[in-house]
Every structure is written in C-alpha cells, then in structure tokens.
Length: 75
Image 1 (cartoon, rainbow, N blue to C red):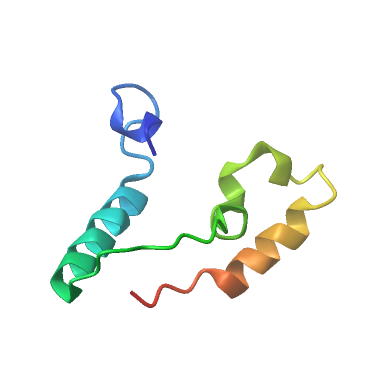
Image 2: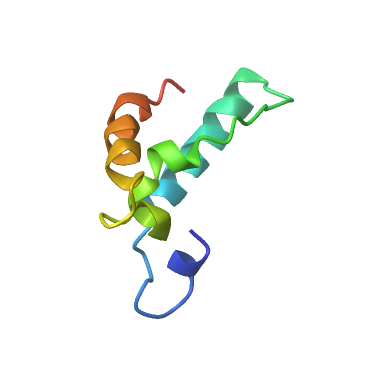
C-alpha cells in the first residue's frame, strides 16, 4: 500500500485497501475498541500481489482459490 501512496506508476493502485483500513479504524473508534489482534492472513486475501503466487509457482493457484474463500470482511 505504501508504494500506492507515492507518485509514480503504482500511485492509487491500492486505494481500495487504503480506504478499507481507514474505514476499519473509523468503525473501531465508534465501537470504543482499544485493542486489535491481527492474524496475518494477507497471503490468503492478497495473494495476487505476491510474486510467489504467480502461475508458474506450485502454490499459487491453491492460494488464489483459498483467497476467494477467506476474503470476507465482517467489520
């Protein structure tokens, strides 16, 4: 997401993710949340952005299919 915020060819490409983080923060503040526990599942929900998930790697297709199962956002 950081590269998406800098001027250049990737500017804005991750705006949806940035907006999502802003919304999560807003909702947490509204609910009075003071602690967040993060289970790092980014390989599942963002597999398309990782070089190791390219088609020519063995695990790529599995991870992309799994991403469809686990990319649900309840907050």
